[in-house]
Image 1 (cartoon, rainbow, N blue to C red):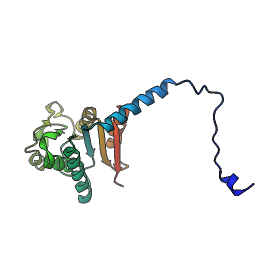
Image 2 (image 1 turned 180 degrees about the horizontal axis):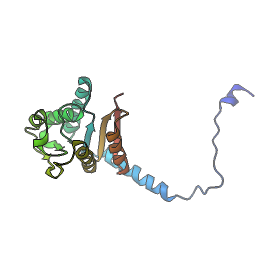
Image 3 (image 1 turned 180 degrees about the vertical axis):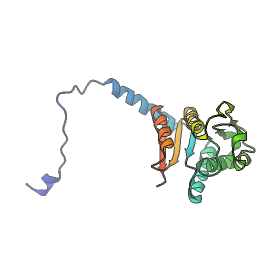
Length: 187
């Protein structure tokens, strides 16, 4: 056998299936893909940016520039509060571009945030607080907050490590909700 014959790939066509029939799962997949394509093509959309608090300054600068660029293009950025990391960088970038295109959803109340977060939120016109979660742990309130942020957006951008359980669950929720998801792994 020649080397050319050995390197050829074979394509197997199943003969026992009716290839002219569209399965129900196929149409659901096509609908989901059509929705994702329409979202990507929209000129202005709601983009959620969430992620890790533990980021080097260079990553924070990239997120800040990304947030700035998204808002300049007419998008609304949705994030949560945070004294450092992803959320803080997203807030800084959006605030530089257009504060009216920033929406910050807090896991609890402004008063429950550390003082540096409270300082960062000065001047943010669209802040949603949740006093009903004031008795919850911050971890539980944050999980609910991430879901709320994802439910409001059309696209999710997430910065995380492979060990970030909470953020992996947030991504899964976004995918289950047929959001356009971009995940940046930092490790």
